[in-house]
Length: 254
Image 1: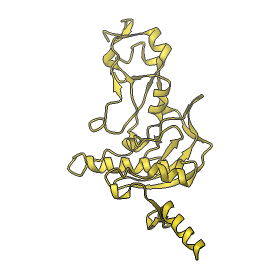
Image 2: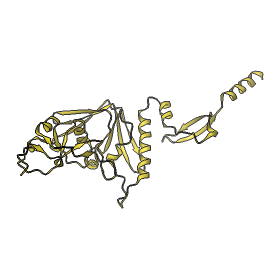
Image 3: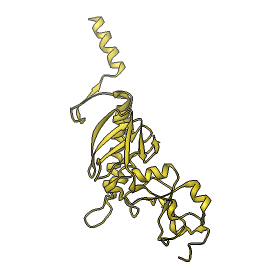
Image 4: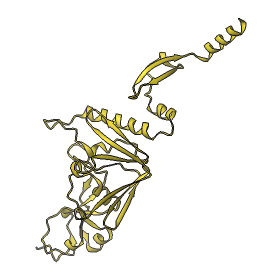
């Protein structure tokens, strides 16, 4: 109540979204921070201030991505009910949330060691809250277990950061499973590459590992056949050009 007539809001009551929203800030980087200084009425009106009551794993990250895209402040305080800030706060959970994909191409199922999830690929997606809309082209979004329980990947995001919205990778003993997180992240990046490459040869080139530790393979060519699950069914050494030339010359002599 003592703060009701003060012309600024203390930074303790506010947060700024400074990074990609994640479901567990104990494991992953914190995406919120206090402003460096108190905010005036004009500062707050210029940026907008919202409240969000979402558990990202359950409810998805769309509202946080919406606020981040618009550079809104988050209300995180417990100011007196008579404080002048309250009429300015927009409660995003009171508004209907609609997510629309732009030029969606297809869906595919990602099957990692920890995360199994349906993924939708598109050019971009739009988050609509009330009369306002933001279009996102470079940050994937998990929609939450209580919603579509899928991931939307726009063409500008080739990372695995969205898995940090879906899971904390903690065991039943609350221990972070780092190796599983890393393997799922690597697999998801390969999965995105395979689903967004311009053609099969381009996808294969981007997915192949580095063979610098296998000198016996240097300069060699291979024919690789994949089965219906995308696993190598056969690998055959392809004749080198010199071998092909010798075979051709032998055939001509005969």
